[in-house]
Length: 215
Image (cartoon, rainbow, N blue to C red; front, top):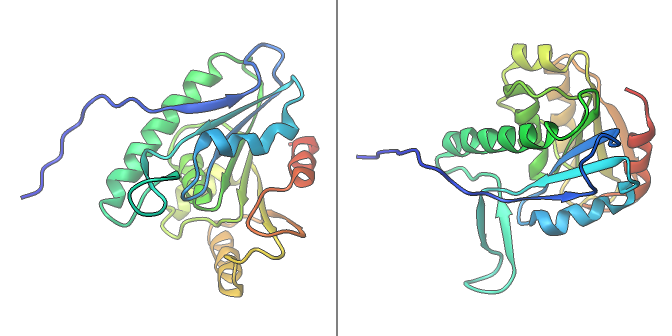
């Protein structure tokens, strides 16, 4: 018989920039499968202008990427006990976000970004918690198909939503592109689509474009 228990858990996150009243934009960014926050956050150095604060939480499950030693990566969830994993990381993300947001001015612009597997993670965070944000950016990933349609539509209808991808991304097949379009239609939103010449990666140019665009 399976049982569950709740207990205190210590989890880490990484930041770029200095939290202060001078911060105008908060970027809350979730990495992809097999990445670590301390390396992922380096990809946002282009935004480090003294007025931007970047926060990168880390997936709660870490593992060796190959065999039993060597490089380590993290994941947000697997198919095993997935609902518990989702509940756990939503609680964790909410705690990190509120801790950081309390250090900034109340009207700071909030941008939520998820890369690859992190796109599903940040989508759930945006629609299944009370987080207040301005922009939702799904990068090289799509909405998870199990988002509650009505609640998600209500949460996203006055937000600026982006879908960003590299034109040579080896993981985004025609089927995935069609699925994203169908999911967006189901949620009654029309994301701003941005593409760039590149693979499964971030683009400094597009990050700056999104940062500069008004809400």
